[in-house]
Amino acid sequence: MTGPALGKLKINAKVTIVSGWKEEEISSEVYIHLKGYAFAKVTHLDIEHKALESFIKPKTGMFLPVKGINKGIEIKLHNKGETLNAIRVYSEILTYVLQPNEKTGAWVGGKLNGIYVGFKKNEMKKLEEIAKIKFGVAPK
Image 1 (spheres, rainbow, N blue to C red):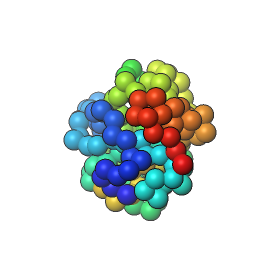
Image 2 (cartoon, helix red, strand yellow; image 1 turned 180 degrees about the vertical axis):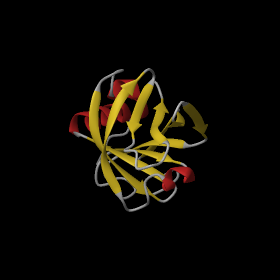
Image 3 (cartoon, rainbow, N blue to C red; image 1 turned 90 degrees about the horizontal axis):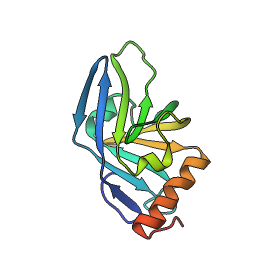
């Protein structure tokens, strides 16, 4: 599901696409999408911008490395001849999920007008804690 909805908690974030040595900001919306709301089967992170569809097609996905960076996270993309290297999401909130240089893997799936990041259980629980503390909403 794209856009705001009950159980989709918008976080203040800046999203960039890293291609070679170039990092370009895209105007996107980022949400913590809680399990049990708006068809979510698990808690995950939604990153919404039409341009992201071209990197991970809707209804497809792959397991990708994700690491904490200064003030956010970086999703490292497998390079299949494209010049795109990573998607970075800058948000102070996400440093609670992954500290700088901390690494994990996540299922990154394509959806209409964006992507979603399905973290492992440990990081998913941290997203749910953020939702409960900052927004007063718990997963169903």
